[in-house]
Image (cartoon, rainbow, N blue to C red; front, side):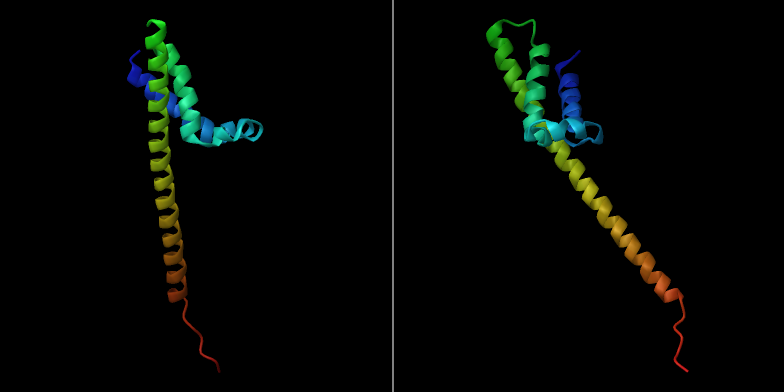
Length: 115
């Protein structure tokens, strides 16, 4: 497999670990860093990098693994920021739609005049 595939896969695993519902029990008992995509991304990337560069000599393996850790950390941060932005936009659109729907419901109901 190519390192790019491992980079994206490790980033996806990081997002699942740091924000996914399935990993909530792990985050509750684990260290606080599991809630941080950058922190978790570094350690996941370090482990993935050690696998990707396993056939290199020890110095290149160590340097490659650390660089891979930083790469996964950066990519995980960017993906998490993008997903957070999209969630905020979705929530804002949903609120705006609901406010519009409620406003239209008030307009459609004729107001009764007092006798």
